[in-house]
Image 1 (cartoon, rainbow, N blue to C red):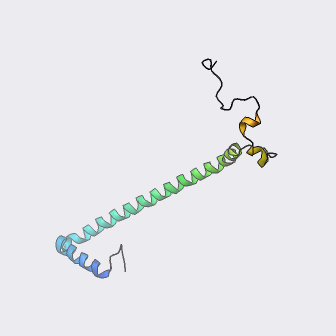
Image 2 (cartoon, rainbow, N blue to C red; image 1 turned 45 degrees about the vertical axis):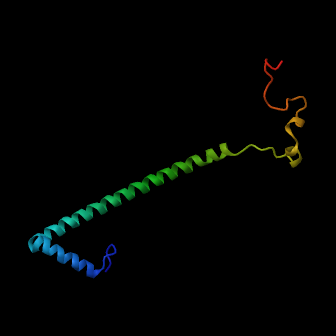
Image 3 (cartoon, helix red, strand yellow; image 1 turned 180 degrees about the horizontal axis):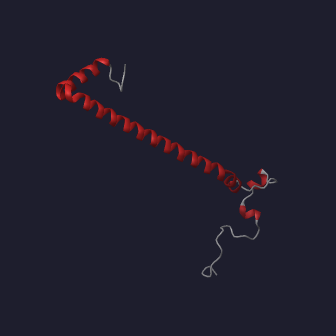
Length: 110
């Protein structure tokens, strides 16, 4: 018997100390109170776990519903005819007459 890492000998020692501290008349009341407290903690943990799983399912459902829309919007538009040669051309050579830097000329430069 192993409960929270506590074996049978340790449990007997704890029971003996509790019996000495609380006495034989008070020990059943303390045991009931401890059992009720543990049960309420277990119920609260189950409720929390159920609520967490419900929220997770709702988020997954919402993600699945919006996934097709975002997948279409997020897909990059590519030119299927583009080749490696076109990608290797410098930008200045691709557009004759365009300034080398992409900044438009200003009135101060003239």
